[in-house]
Structures are given as structure tokens and as C-alpha cells.
Length: 283
Image 1: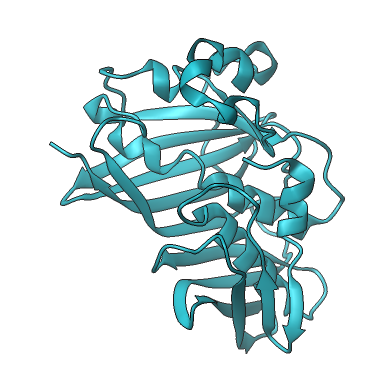
Image 2 (image 1 turned 90 degrees about the vertical axis):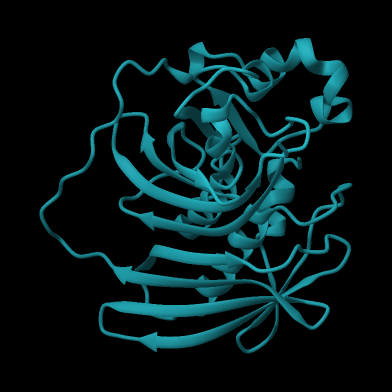
């Protein structure tokens, strides 16, 4: 993982032509680019082309087409599909080695008053400050994690239940994670949306194998994101604690589908997420 300052810099794309941006990957030993990074950068590219003031992203739908190469930059080409009176629509294609590796469609909406209702936040969830940090939780597994244990992380993740390394053989239908940026972010709502887009891809697909008593490190398990969708309901800050309530919807035919709702600490539903991924159980 990377420190928060590096994440903010990675989300700061270089404009190289009208509707064309260049993004870089962190200097890490990865075989492929983290999907949340590409989704966050693509949302940045789309947002940069929205000229009307006050329009914020309210939904995005994306497909992961090919593994990203972390050793070369990623080009983001934006198609300005529509600029309406209330909605703006953008399509973004991420390109490496002359081929599309990812595409995203995002819609932006001006704020409008209206009636308000939401699904309630789950009851009885422990306060995030009462839960152990990553280093505290993972201390018994330090020898397995190696440098990953000491590497700075941009997002503070605190599992409400057992951590993936602690729940082998235990069947669950979902999981809950408190998360936030490890430090204060600038007061830019678009940056907060992009940071949360990055973070939303960190744990959701893992939920699809919980019914089988597996975790991401189970022998023979192969997982990769196929698509990712988000709906942004209400304002939030990614540097405040957010509860990610995740549910395994269906796993079969080597695909898994998981859904998540993200709540602020006071119980406000701010984002909903659905993701499908490749899930080969290796049995």
C-alpha cells in the first residue's frame, strides 16, 4: 500500500490534451494495477471535464477489461457524451499499450431539493475507535505479511468481525469494515468521492467467498474484479469514519456478486456499491 499523500498525488492526473489525461501508478511490486486506483483516476478524468459548477457525481458504472501494467502510465480518454440542464454524462476509457484496460461511465447531477428516505444503518456495530488498528490486529501474522506489515497505508481499515486471515473455515454471509483516510484531506468533494471510489474496491469482492469459509489468501483461489458500480446519495468526507456494510449476493459459474452500503458514523447512508468479479475457488 501507499501513504495518503502519494494517493492524492496519484489521483492528480496530468492533462496532456483536450479530454486526455495521464495517470501514474505507485512504485510498488505489483503484478497489475489495483482496480480501485484505475476507477478513482478515471473518475478524476471525468470530473475534470464537467464545466458546470455544482455538479457532483451521483453514479458510476465501470468494467475492468485487462490487467493494468503498473510500470507504464495510463492514458484516460474522456468522451463528453451529454451536457444537460440537470445531468452531465461522461465516458472514460483507460488505455495502455494501445488497448483499453478499463472503461467507466459516470453521471453528474446538480443538487435538487426533495423528499428523503434511506435504509437504516445496522444496529449494534462497535465504534471504530474501540476496534484494533491494522497493525494491532495483524501483529500475530507479521511474519506472513513481511514488508506489507510496516508499509504505510492510505486507508485505515478496521474489521468489525474477524480479519480475513482469522476466519478460515468460518462461513459468513457478509462483513463490516470501518474505513477512512488516515489523515485530513483537502475540502474538495470530488477528491473525497475519488478516494472513496479507490477504497470501495479494497474489500468488497472478498465478501463473495465468505460463505465457503475462504479468504483472499486461500490456496488455489483466483479472484479479479470484472465490474464496479457506485451510487452517491449524500455528501460525506472520506477522512471521517465510514461503515462499509457488505453482503455476498451470489457466487457461481466462477463469478461472485457482492453489494455494500456505506454509512457515516451518525447513520447517514451516503454510497451504495455493487461489484462482480471472477471467483475461481480452486476445488
